[in-house]
Amino acid sequence: MKQRIHPEYRSVVFRDRAAGHAFLRRSTALTDRTVEWEDGRTYPVVDVDVSSASHPFYTGQGRVVDTTGAVEKFNRRYRR
Image (tube, rainbow, N blue to C red):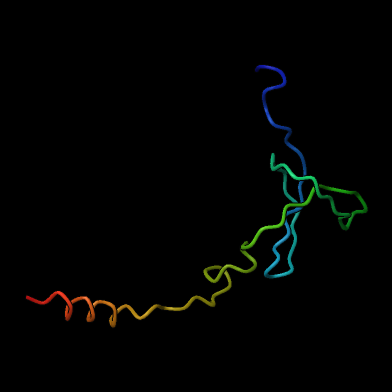
């Protein structure tokens, strides 16, 4: 393996702004900001907009879009 061409693989805190949830994982993500974690150590932090804590698929709060209305509207518009 070539030296000095691979990004540093380290522990990084990912913080979900929508859910107020944070989790510690190993990653090569680059960031200048840091945060003190529960164990007292300081880790780089990456703010994410959506994670499994806030995504509707994982939380069970998904909504069904009006699929029948969209199809009927299409058929009305392009009926021959």
